[in-house]
Length: 467
Image (cartoon, rainbow, N blue to C red; front, side, top):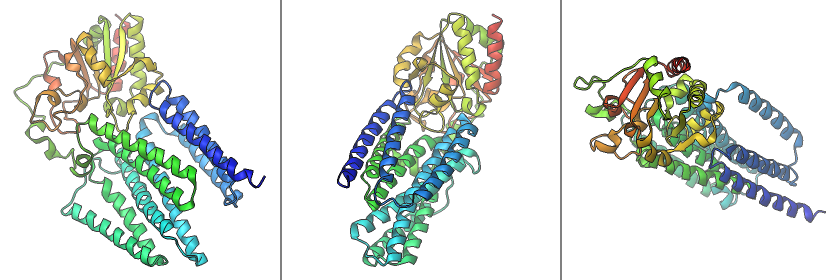
C-alpha cells in the first residue's frame, strides 16, 4: 500500500492534467464552454484530493478552514456579482492567484530560514521567480480591477522618467536576487525584493488605458499561471507545474489574439499609454463642422428593423455599461416572431475582457448559434438589411480600413458600413477609446439613435410590437 500511494497520486495527476487539456479545448467555443468549465473543475478536484493524500500535507484542519472560507466567499460572489462586472471579477481572481503563488514562495523561504536549512540553488531561483511573477500579478491585477471598477481613472497614468524608474525597480530586483543566490539567508533582502515586485505590478498597469484591459487581463491571467508553475517547482508538485504551464500558455495565446484584433503589438499596449487625449490627434476632435449626421427616433428605427429580412446586432461596451443585454434579447425575439433573421456579430476586443460580449449575451440566454465572430460575419454584411450597433465604437470605425493617418488604421473591424442600413445607438458623438472620430456616424446609410442603450432598445421593443 505504501508503494501504491505515490504511484496512485501521480496517476491521478495525469488524469487531472488530461481533464484540464480537454476543458481548455471545450472552452474555445461558446457552445461547449460550460461543459469545458465543468470538466476542468473535476480535474482540479481530483488534483486537490490527490495532493491532500500526499504525505507532505499534514494539517488537514487548516485546509478545511480555508476550504470553508473560500467556498463561502465564492458562493456569495457568484450570487452578488453582476455579469456586467465580470471583467473586474476576473481581474480580482487573477490577482488572488498571483498572491497565492507568491505566498507559497514566502512561506517556503520562511520555513527553510526558520529551520536553518540550506537553500538549494534551484529552489532559490524558483522562489525568486515566484515572488517576481506573483507579486506583479497581484498588484497589477488589483490596479486593473480598480480601473475597471471606476475606483481610479481608466485613463493611462504617466509621469516623467516613468520607464527609467521602472527599469531601476527591475534592476533592484535582479540585484537583490543575485545577492540572495550568493547569501540565501538574508531576510531583509528577501522582504525587500517582495516589496519591489509589488511596486513593479502597480507601475506595470497604471500607464495602460481602460480600453486595453482585454489584453491586460489576458496577460495577467498568463502571469498567474506562470506564478503557479513557479510555485510548483518550489514545492516540487508536478500537478501545479502542469496546471500553471497550461494557464500560462493559453493566456499568452489569448493575449496574442487580442493584440492582433487591435492591430497593435504587445509592446505598444504596455508602453505607449494609448488612449490619451493626444493619441487621437486632429482626427480625435468631436467638434467636426463639415460633417452631418442623420438621427432618428425609436419609431423610425422600429420600422427599419421590423420590415427588414435580416438584422445583425453588434454589441459593444456601451451595452455592457447600460446592462441592456436582456432588452437586446427581447428585441431579437420580437423580430424573429415577425420573420426577421437575427444574428450577433462579436468583435474579439469588444468590452473590457476577452469574451465579454459572449458572457453578457449568454446571461440573457441568447442562442449560441446566433453568435458569429468577426471573420464569419464580415462577408455577410453586404446581404444584411440592417446592422444595429449598440454601444460599439472603434471596432466598427471604417477609418481603420481606409484612413492611413488614423491611429487605428489596419485594425480589423466589423464592417457594418457595408450593410444596406446601419443604426447606431449611442449617448452622443464622443470618440471611442482610441480618441478618433468615427467615420461610420457620417455615412449616408447610417442613422443615429441617441440615448442610453437600455432605454433606446426598450423603446424599440415597444415600437416593434405595435407594427
